[in-house]
Image (tube, rainbow over all chains, first blue to last red; front, side, top):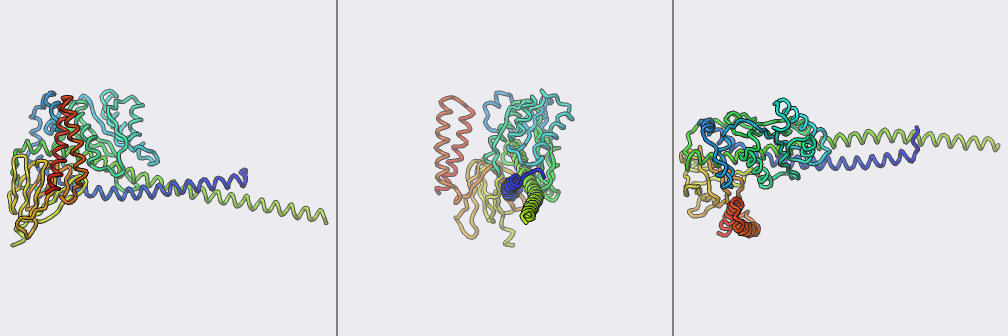
Length: 317
Length: 141
């Protein structure tokens, strides 16, 4: 019982303050989580629709035919502001691998960031990529700092994703990512992020995104069979299949990346809320053990005092 | 059989569904011209212009619900027309001030881009301008 009464008292009050803060942060995260989940539900309507159209197009073997489409020349690309749709179908020999790593900007989210970073490193070493062949696009400050420090190429980083990211806000970012694919900064693109399972669990995902192939269309868990069946009908294409693909593919790629950001953000709020909850619980534990210590110290002080008083009384008599 | 003669129009964007309704006629501006879709049309996929989608209000002859869309495409099958666009707004939800400001901004950017001969920025500004003008046109109906 080394600590003095004063000292224990101070520690109790400071732990109480911490508890209040983490408790408030937990509530904020939980509120954000439910907000973003609502938003995700409405996004999924859109994602499902665009995916089912793509799946339909894939079924009519358009995507396999993509290999025969020659990429447009560089000059043509430069004169073209629109995201070039058809080039997304072309498989190129892989010289550089692009990896979009989605982390959070701030800490206090438990193992969220370290999980993503660790698994991304595993992906890199598992794929036998050397540091030079990997191009990292960092969404979120933690990942950006980490990969830059390790000497990876980070040509583009984005900080300050909103708590509830809106499509319009992320559009520039998404466009940049696709532009870099067109410039051959990388020849294939993975997106690494934490998929939200529930507020206690999230699961790392590395999804191949570009080039779009019939393979990575439709193997997503959001596509269920019942939905695809509605698309057995033959469509009339207006103006032409190629023109439709030009419109649909960039929208599809954008929606995939946006979806990943949304999912990652959901998972971030989830981890944050869990981390804050356990911090609050820990603070409660600390406080109760400190209070016990405090009461013991107080009791022993009182006992000592009484002994002293009675001792003094006895001496007087 | 009356129910057979209706088609459902829904407009979805990444930020949620914008419009949902049943109608006898929906008019879309596609990249190759205007098409009207009546119930039981054959399945169709068409890319859209930055323009409006008009959905006839049930029980009227000349009243339309108007929705501003920024491109995207429409997919029609089984009497359901789904417009999938990056952004869309119902006429009554359009913020006129914001659209006007967006137009000014786009015009300024266009001017600056033209002077510096920056083709990319020019095109981008043109598209932004078209969106803003589209919104203003529709809200001003």
